[in-house]
Amino acid sequence: MYLRPFDPWKAKLCTCPFKYTLNVYTGCDHACLYCYITSYIPRAFRVRTKEGLLPKLERELRKFDRRYIVALSYSSDPYPAVERELGITRRVLELFRRHNVRCLLLTKSDIFERDLDVLSELSCAVGITVTTVDETKARLLEPNAPSPMNRIRALRKARDAGIPVYARIDPIIPFYTWEDFDKTLNALKFVSHITVSTLKLRADIRKRMEAKFPALMETLNSLYKRGERIGGYRYLPRGLRFQILREAEKRINNAGITFGSCREGYHSYPSCDGSHLVPP
Ligand code: SF4
Image (tube, rainbow, N blue to C red):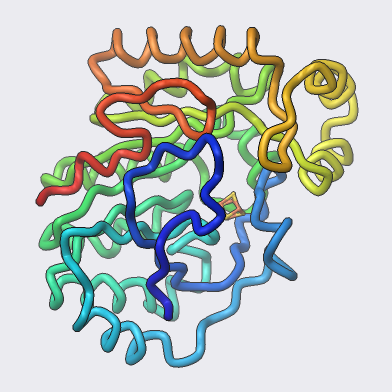
């Protein structure tokens, strides 16, 4: 089955409404330092196509209960560089259109701009992740992803095409992306909903970040040492984490945007993941 219920592990702090997820590709070449898929996908930063995806998906969609949303994608990006040539995600969206499937798209690319014609005919919401609008920092953190300003420009076009749009500022990294939060929020003021999440560390993420940011990681390691361990991840100490989340929520709400948080043990309204934006 290519359409799978989201979060089969039932993470303790996940507050997502029940939904399905589809990973059009296996792996993701954006190669973000903080990426968590490296803990369960071998050679995670190499993108592979899936055997017979489109015909198999079409069969699954014939029986799909359209009350539920399909999220693209949570263990990969629906728009890796190769999607420009292959157009597989575009064909998946065309199948969704044919079968009237509701979709929650999330990407760190601007390639979706090509597919706005299909997306505007779907019941969908489109979101981008932007950790920071500082291009130099983003390049270090997400070496192969398109620049944040290109992602934002493409999302504006989606909004102008009448598609509900949202964003994730995720992860918030203290002493790094948190410093740019206001600028990042300011560039995203046109979206309806923003989900935030603080950096959560596990061994593979820590190793990649220490190699690139030795000084920052010295500071962060001493902070995270005092944090909780939840579901295999080391979190920031609860006091500091909630202080950041409260501040982010206040600034996001003051901009007239609804606030969601992801796996923080903190509240969200009206949804954590932006799924409330997908038209019925
Ligand atoms: S875009 Fe997402 S899935 Fe891809 S490398 Fe970055 S964090 Fe991982």
